[in-house]
Image (cartoon, rainbow, N blue to C red; front, side, top):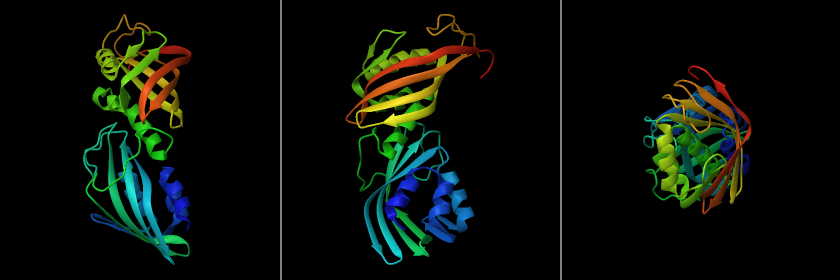
Length: 269
């Protein structure tokens, strides 16, 4: 087994593909508070662990000997939903935690038949990388940012901004500063909630390009809403293309444009 291939598959986020490709039918997984036997139990565990949490590995040291692999891994967990029961601490959209793992993999016929994992307390002895960028963990962080924004959690999505971030949207005057953006959206969210459903994300160290479906849902009557008058329960929906300029791993500039018209829908979304 090539560990680099395992890492790439793990960070791809498709647990069924990972388990099918790299794990023996008789896999035995042991951790401090969990034991699994066989692929089905392992998949059930991964489905629970990854429900609303993207797990991305950043191996620091990997040692191989015959049929045994030892890995020292800094594991990043990025939340896209509320997980009050998460084993490394309660998480909400926009949160992340990094945990040091020591893992051994015993192989049989090139597949993992025994997996043992132990971990340190969250944040202890770990490395960090800039929050946003092209690494799978940084892209997962961006998904977490979008979830925090769609959850109207201003305090959490503002953590992804440079203090002097600039927001430029065609229908509005430019807004400068993280606090200015928070103040704008906090007022808007009292009447209209904006959510983003990601279609695709392209990222480099300097920029992120987002293609998404945006929805503006009125939670109160909003006859003067800038995108169009809305009654409670109505929503506007359409495609948006957003460019984010990244500086030191945080968002420094946001610009966006609609791709097509917004369509109004009546009643509850």
